[in-house]
Length: 334
Figure 1 (cartoon, rainbow, N blue to C red):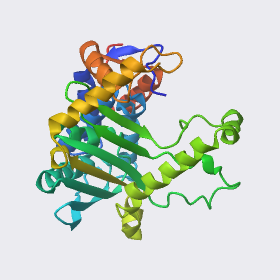
Figure 2: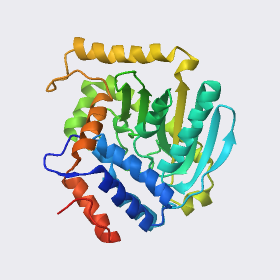
Figure 3: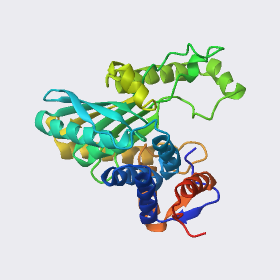
Figure 4: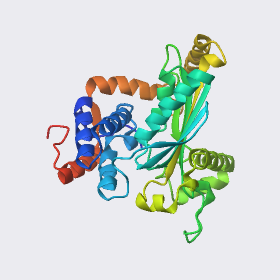
């Protein structure tokens, strides 16, 4: 899904940022929120995570325009302790309240060693890695997941869906290195991608059941920590009806490294593992390097920032659609 496109146009970072900000402001998003949303979406593009980049602008703007997400939410704290804060996102998209929650979690980690923040009443929060990388930059280990209302209830499906394909919520662990990009597992919990369905994939269930059992377990834990722990079930029916797309929640945990161990020593150990894996293991079939998660994204970020972001047909189609609907100029030259 997130392989570089075979055919593409290169789009400069600055033009994508401007395009996304203009689109969001046109549908009522406050300028300061539009800047944050645009920055995170373009960061996904820079990392080569095409599924979570600016091609999402079209769908997000349609949700704001359609009245199913709040374009100008006013997040509020609903619970608070020295280490934990719980926030209601007021029916908006998940990015901005999760950024605020992460800042609060990091501040608490600075005070007591651990900080956790949860957000309820939000729509999609994008890549979990956004918030974990903020933790890394602050000298913390980051962990984040997203969940939603009623995850795991398949009563409306007939026939019953296969448990092996039980949801795919985002999950991220991020551990900073000293000279390396560190280790950033920014993924989702299902063993297969969302588009890998059908008889050939169902045949794998009997062949590698352990992998699917683990996948189901990861999904349940992530959904409960990102949804149940965030209190998505505590929001009133009225609040859910007002902004029906805001059925999600998110959790971010920041662990201050030097509260447990010398920070330099830990970062050097992360670098050691990254280096040892690269030099002592055979790579996956078809690849020429043995890498831990996070390296490719870091390399693409630097490359695409210099050369421009390759926009494939899927991205171009989504951007053309929203530009036409909102009367916004395309971020590349035709």
